[in-house]
Image 1 (spheres, one colour):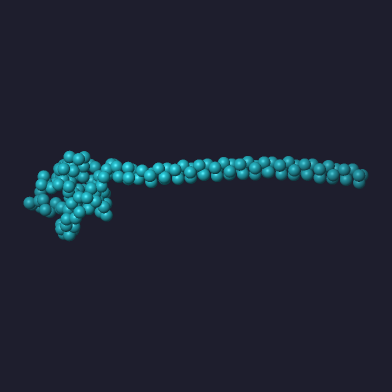
Image 2: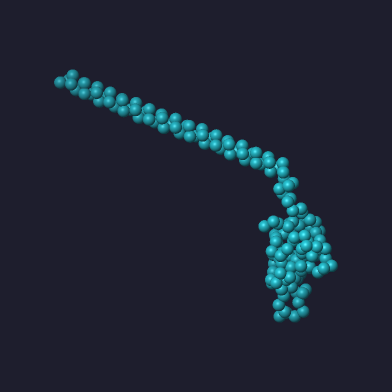
Length: 170
């Protein structure tokens, strides 16, 4: 009887060892597959990094063509308000584009208008922000931009400045 029990125990141990070995092989296979995927992901990341570096080098090499498709212009920049334009307080003012004057809008001189600085286009005025062209300046002005401001004192304080202005292609 003892022999039978020993044989059964030995068979159970052998079967357990077999299953343990099978599970170990399966886990090693899973780990190997994960390592392979990790290596592939690392290669993919390296490829993206290489492509990114290549693109960065191309951009830097062509920066003057990319960053300055429309050249910056050094223009005379002034400010105006509706107060300067009205004779009476109830008078309704419209810009040359037939919109009401408002903050964030600019008038451009007619020479710039003829060069494509037209209504609806946006300009960036260095250190002042982005503005929409909605109005035209008088015919005597050249190479000039006039920023609309609601506050008369602020417009006076702004004065007349030479500032870099860029026509945005948006």
